[in-house]
Image (cartoon, rainbow, N blue to C red; front, side, top):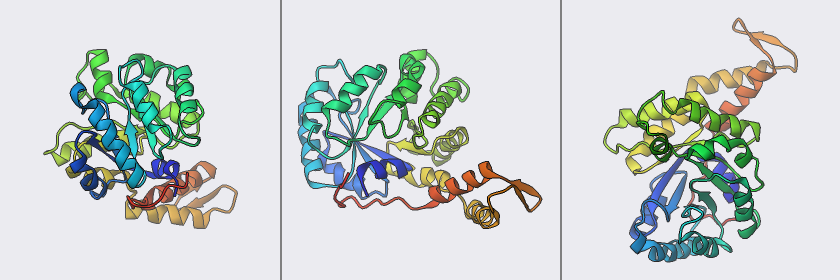
Length: 281
């Protein structure tokens, strides 16, 4: 499975700070579908170079991962790209706003490197469709905390960010990308809060969520994995479908219903989380 395929199938993505290499293997073995090696917010300025070197060593030895670089315009961005240029991974660009800069980023990286624009500013959200349409983009992600700070709203407010979340979902669908990745939940002790956040994202069309602690993974995975009843319904729909509109259990089945059934079964497939599998792009 290629890095792009891993990225498209992932439901749980776990952050790990780049300056803590002692946590890399633990994160990879946590059950997360992919890990996000963070060079940005989790790493203080004094640790940036150390974190970059740690991530380079991990990518040379381990399996598929996402690397969140520092944002364009920061003192560390160019060095991050230089380190990643020949290495196999997906690249998450924080504060993505400019489609031209995103295209330049794609040109600097190894051919086939999937890009994840992190949409977390007002400008980025207004350019969401153009950013998702850039060549090389493998999946979009939503940065709820930074956007809330940019807008001056509470990130826990269910209404304040709903429109922005829907913009990311619509932009992803319009560009035929996999369902986008929702932002983090800050509590690591309240399983119900994590589950509620994941449920809200799923209802809007997100198909994955970024996590900050292994304790969040089980709840997130359960939300984004179709239930046994949903899978049974999907199989019955596909068995009954004959290319024309028909009826199953009193409900019409036509092409949109068949499409939903196929997506449910695809979402139920267990992503390959082998951290030592080689990348074939």
